[in-house]
Image 1 (tube, rainbow, N blue to C red):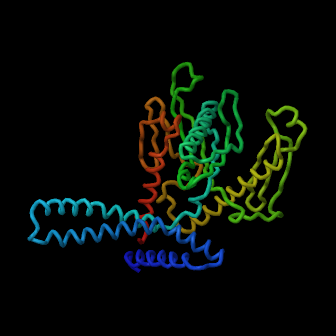
Image 2 (cartoon, rainbow, N blue to C red):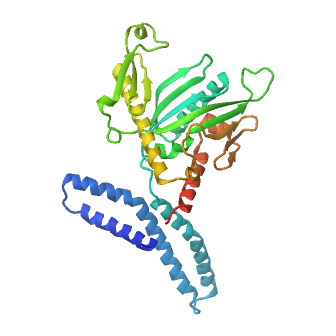
Image 3 (spheres, one colour):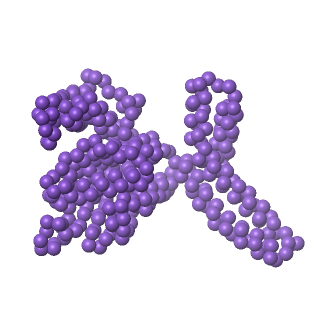
Length: 357
């Protein structure tokens, strides 16, 4: 089937759904048709704009061949023809991107984990700054950022921290953040002024629902124990911490909250679902493609993806060779859109070059 035939089929399907929704339908059929209609909406708008632009170009082409029109009007028509002709390839590219197979996780919420890597206390401070960077970015996007757990060091750093981020298209925008983030700067504790290199690891997991990952009770080993750390008398007297082992995969998660064992269990199950879901997505991705390098990043936590160089005020993403001299805006204000948009655009371009569309 040609691209033109595929686009016409989409328009026809959208029109059929529109007529179907205007008739009397059982509730379950109405909900299904309504979702399908809504899902097709964005690409239908793109196809409609493309067809309209194409028709205008054809009309102008015929007009420009008319020798009876005056030169001033012809010059205006020629300029419009040129502008629309420049616009057409970009409109077609947007349609092709919309036709690419979707990552089933893109519209899901996400769980983000940040861990200090090599570099001691400086790495822990950097991990804390990264975690806060994502919190600020979530705020700018009007997403909900809920801290799940964190382990502090003595001077405000984080050994590790995790949060649940919910909102519109969270995972689609954050999924390329997984990997090793490196920082180069003079630590506050460094008296000689030498630049140190430290690192932190980021993992972004799609938050799975119960319908995505349904656990069998026999596959889970759930343990409770007393929460460690600060918390006063309550921590010393209540088995509030929850540790869950997923026996088939060996994945272990633990959550502790001095007030509620029930809340800890719910959070631990949420994290476990995300980790098991990630394993399944990774397995399917490897089945679909033998060349993982064609993607922006595999999500491998050992892959060094970005360097934050404070003396030069630059942030460099090594996967797409992008350097921005906006370290303060990115790290301390959470203004990450330029980075994230570039990563998404690169990924889309790679997928287009490898597709049959």
